[in-house]
Image (cartoon, rainbow, N blue to C red; front, top):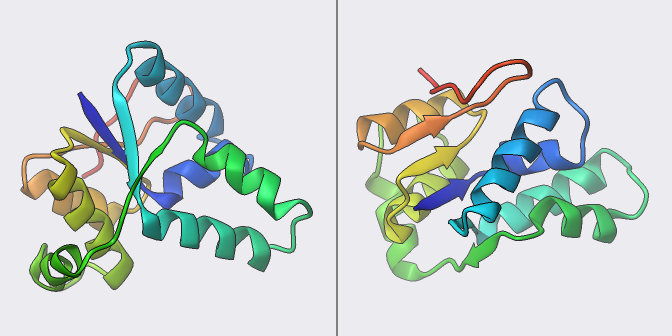
Amino acid sequence: MILYADSSALLKRVVIEPESASVRALLTEYHAAEHLVTASSVAWLEIWRSLRGAGVRHVETLAAQALSGVAEHPLSAELLSRARIIGPESLRSLGAVHLASAVAVGAEAILTYDDRLGAAATSLGIAALSPTSGSDVETAD
């Protein structure tokens, strides 16, 4: 199985939020089952920029922790062309890149806390996962 993870989920590995433990548990489960966990190169950019913008110390270390065990799917001209037209008009640019990347890698599920991205993924038959503390995996609406 291939799980695509976006920046909103991966950041929860290092920025403590109510969903952080659930994200870590889900990723641990996928890795233990030897499933591929992947993200677009844009996730590397978003995570670095988010951590820098928050003024945290040791950005390099935290970014490496957030992205640990995640296979990087590179941006390409073809992927960016697909991102221009994929999903509804309400999907923002980086969300469209994430969605196009998830489709390109053949992801069966996407781990995201972006409601627009989750809904767009679901409309394409990709399960949207947004686990919360004290619950099993939930699908985004």
